[in-house]
Amino acid sequence: MPGPLELNAYAGRSWAVSESWNARLAAVHYAYPNDNASIRYDYDELTASLAFRDRLSASIAWSPNTSRYARYYVARDRTALTYDLVGQWPLHDALSVNGGVGYYDLDDLFGTGYGYWSAGVTWTKPHFQLDLGYYATAARARELFGSESAGERWALTVAWQFQALR
Image (cartoon, rainbow, N blue to C red; front, side, top):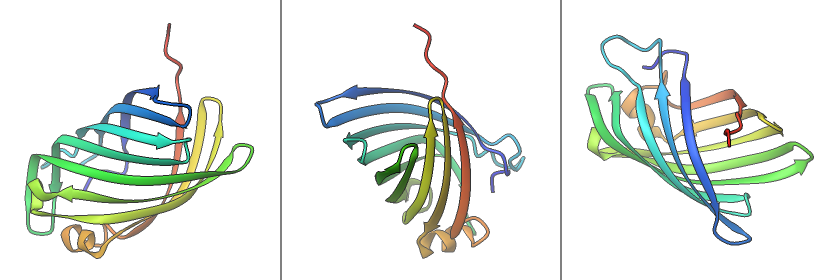
């Protein structure tokens, strides 16, 4: 199981496809500096997304180097896919609500996958974002990883956005 600290390096680019649609490509490196010494959970991910009016987004993500412990298996540096559908609705000024559903395809690691969902609120200001979310996984995730790693959780995320130099 990864340590309690997660650091992400993110690079991405968005394009307007039309007045209502935009596309995004992103690369993310997930680092767990305090993870278990017997297996490194760090991995990379490439994501392609298509969004309608920044209210509804569909994405697919591919990881070439996912490593995970399951209850009776260890899989190292295998491919994994994630499919997401996420909605967001503004409430007032900087506050919005969001929710999503998805599927984590771990077929190359464990011959299976599992569904998940989330609901939350987001407060956004220029260069700063605060998210409070509730996240849940299907029973298959708990069968694979145990209830200490899968199930239902709350998370608070703080993000600071840097502007690109021109």
